[in-house]
Image 1 (cartoon, rainbow, N blue to C red):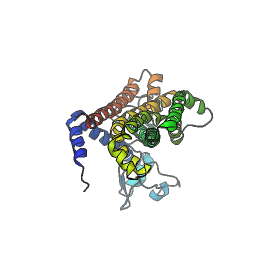
Image 2 (tube, one colour):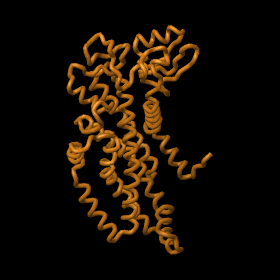
Image 3 (cartoon, rainbow, N blue to C red):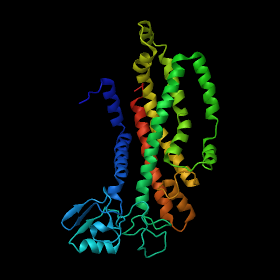
Image 4 (cartoon, rainbow, N blue to C red):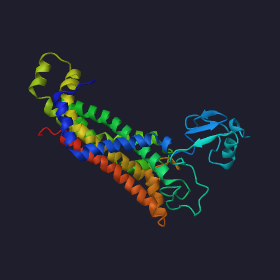
Length: 340
């Protein structure tokens, strides 16, 4: 078992003392785990199926209708009465997830025109294409969180590297880097995304690459300031006098101290990434059409004012995720505060 240093243990204790940040972290991890296992919670395929004395797991493996005595060589529609009768004819049964709809599964048995209000079948109602809102929220939140985590990781690697080089070497390296940052940060990111979407069909990786070109700028100034201060400390000068390479000095002696301010900044980069992706989806320049996303749900709420559950669901989902990340960031800031 890994042992924490006394400093790391004190920081963890300070983070635990911030009850709002500590419980927000656990609640966010629980929600993230729920979205990662979304197929086990919301799916139009049964979790377990028994047919002719054998068990099948359609969630994990594709089965054709012919395997259950049907005629078509395509994947079985487990929600249809025909497939249900085929399975029941051999004494079989099916166990569906709590939400028997996937993100793109329409409900053909609605008693009201779509978008339909919440009911016992569709807990948060359906959208204008008869798809279950709760299922789309689960899968849309997963895309948003994974996008934000990937963007934060890429931004951290680039931003920390650029800030470390500027702050450690200074001089012409710092001067050239600052001028480049001034020019690069002045580019209108949202307008560039909208313009480029006219030439390339947006998707997850395309948006991630474009956003990564600009999101790393937020960390450069923080890391640069820590390195400018740290390179003049006595122990760094002693390490340089002993002949340690610049790489070892940066990684061993200065970077760990610079990470204190960086870690407390990461949750706010996450919130910015989620907000940006939601805004692009709302404007129609984000994920491909039909993809489950929170921004697309907001757009549907705007277009269907007679269905307030669409807008309310998107609002409360975003408010919950962003609030949890902000509370976690505040807890990390207090934990890594050198004045504490």
